[in-house]
Amino acid sequence: MKVSEVQQLKQKRAQTALWKKPDSSSNPSKQALHHLLVQPCLQSKRREQAPDFLGTRGYARHRWFTITKLAVCKETVKKNQTTSYRGIQTTMAAQYLSDPRTSHGLANSGDSQLRLVLVGKTGAGKSATGNNILRKKVFLSSFSAVSITKHCEKGSSTWKGREVVVVDTPGLFDTEAPDAETVKEITRCMVLTSPGPHALLLVIPLGRYTPEGQKATEKILTMFGESAREHMILLFTRKDDLDDMDFRDYLKQAPTAIQELIHKFRGRYCVFNNKATGAEQEDQREQLLTLVQDVVDKCKGRYYTNSRYQKTEEEIQKQTQVLQEYYRAELERAKAQIKQEFEEEIRKLKDELEQQKRKVEMEMQLAEREAYWVSRQQTAREDVLSQDKILEIILNVLRGFFSLFKD
Ligand SMILES: Nc1nc2c(ncn2[C@@H]2O[C@H](COP(=O)(O)OP(=O)(O)OP(=O)(O)O)[C@@H](O)[C@H]2O)c(=O)[nH]1
Ligand SMILES: [Mg+2]
Image 1: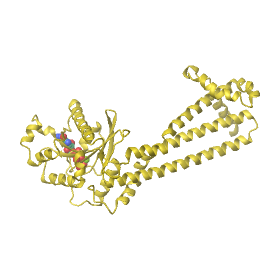
Image 2: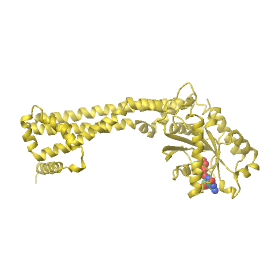
Image 3: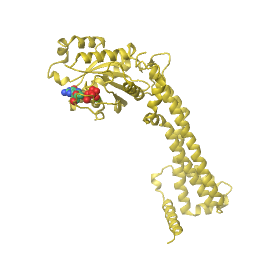
Image 4: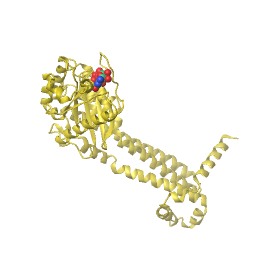
């Protein structure tokens, strides 16, 4: 069999498949669609062809199949377009851009995320805590004399219908002066939590609050500054080391440094046993997230931000717009190509029925392409954040006035 014959056979098979009778019971709006889409064809200037047009029962069914699919496709595009481009910009701006005059990000009702950052000394139990909040093993956590987490990482889960985003960090504040690698990691942390975290969890292991640990805490408090204090929560790990002792009893004889911290944080603390399972694990997670919600409520929904976070967010939005423009251009390019290819083919066709069939196919392909690129525009921000390039761009933007977090 010749290649052209095989192709013809394949085409015929494909057409037969399309012509299969659609299940009318599965499509209750069939009558309405007929009225809307087929009826106008019958009333068109090709009316005289109508009996033949519908007389070809298979073709009529094929048109049904195609028209219904096209209508669904167009409906998807319409739906997507309501939130596309300008819509995306407005939503994102409202959701993420904070008032540049304040040092706090104003949460929008659409901002359903709860963004948390874990900070603390190496080995304090940040990654183990992150995994317990997320209820899954996302971060590497292990007993070691050297730091385990090398880069900031992000994980997410849900709590009461809200997305909980947790960012785990390496021991960013262990060294005296931040080196280039630390600055890079702090920037990565800002990118991952942009436009700003709702709560900063300062992780401290119970019974191991060494002088170095105290130094790290002081550095964190200084670096984030006074404006971050109301977003901070103390998270003590190693509750299991207390055995059956009540935490309040422990506090009575705890090192003064711990007592002072509790006082400084006005009782905003949580105690975790990262080895816990079952109900105990669920209870401590619930207690922490309820405390986070309390913090958010007290801050009237605001998240923590500063001038560097605002610059970071501005740049993310700028890059998102560039990518959306690119996706829009790609859509136009794809549409022009589809039109050119089909129109050339249609021009060569003599049979008006065949021409009509090709036009419907063209419309379908256009609608499908549009649905694809519109959805890419909607998720452009995620695409920007998943590229390594964004970190370099923001590092460049922040270079020169990087004095860590403090305003
Ligand atoms: N018994 C007990 N061990 C814990 C607890 N929390 C953490 N650990 C252990 O402490 C060790 C260090 O925990 P990590 O979660 O890796 O600590 P980290 O702060 O992420 O450390 P770096 O990534 O190196 O900065 C691991 O062996 C954990 O299992 C806890 O509540 N109880
Ligand atoms: Mg870690």
